[in-house]
Image (cartoon, rainbow, N blue to C red):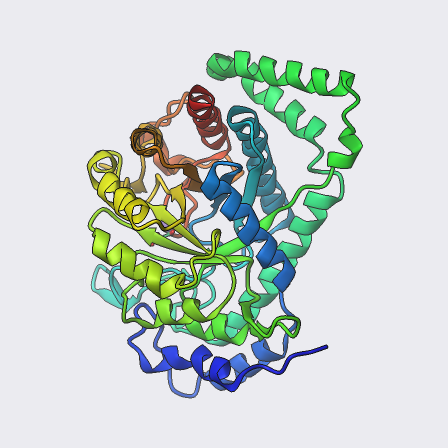
Length: 451
Ligand code: PEP
Ligand code: MN
């Protein structure tokens, strides 16, 4: 039997419109925002309510230590890079990382792409100046184009519709890859053997060999690898552009609850999590699992007010705090926050984003991150949770399956002077394929030490 949406719910879904909304584009007059929104409202959902609920359960398991979250993908997806090869290589990288992490953690890994919707970006300034030209800042492909011309940078609401189609095509391919045999653990493991066989990564050989043994043991015991050819894979992005998120929000007629069907999980960023702001108000009305980024300046009181705002019913798996403190700061900044949440008896899932607190500009002018800082922040995250007896529930990373040179360091020793050779991101620097796998092996070691 279908349930009609409660009128209060419909009012609540639009209450954000009366609140200050940070980081929204200014659409030029006559650019057709109403038409674009109407088109989006008529489109099918990208994900289903039942899948979102399942992810909530998986995140709850991660919050208890019965699973581990791997969330990763581009800082900003672009329409031009949403090609079959790029999507395949990103999924492949995440699957390879997940296999290694599963071994280290001895629990299932919850695989969540920063994919199929990560098309909008918060910016530190509304404008960008190059020489004597000042234009609107690039806000992600769903808003404007990266090219530095007046026409490209003009916000165009029809790009939201393009973003929807690019997300649908991406998700379609991701679903095919993750259920059609590509994700077969035997292939994934063979790819990982290829990685660790490379002399540069020989220190990971012994773990790769241990995984090999474990696989042969499973086979000998009669484990059905054919039944494990399909994996669960979820899509997530920052819920930044509220017109887009609202237009894809649908009432589930099974339960009468609202779901943002643009992705399974959405998160609110460090720059838009104002307690009285539009973003938190919006995510409070949807039933999806929700993430909130926490930077080093957040206070215990603020965190408890975030909990009350987003998860008043205290549903495990509903709220994930994604901490991005900085390698040099996390060991001081994180404990009081975790301690406060724990002392209030609240259950959240803690995930480490070791990227956003560790960004700096190279001597050559590139926005970069050093691999060692990324690893050090994850180490700090594990150490804090270990000391407090709480659960480090996962990692959230910006990565690509391509061999870019955007972050320095790692065993393949990318130097600042190498950054220019393949710097392709339109926003933040990503770990490349090898750096991502190396991180997975290191985090697997950290997990294994603690289990
Ligand atoms: C991001 O995830 O790309 C981002 C902008 O992060 P944060 O909100 O943590 O700064
Ligand atoms: Mn980013």
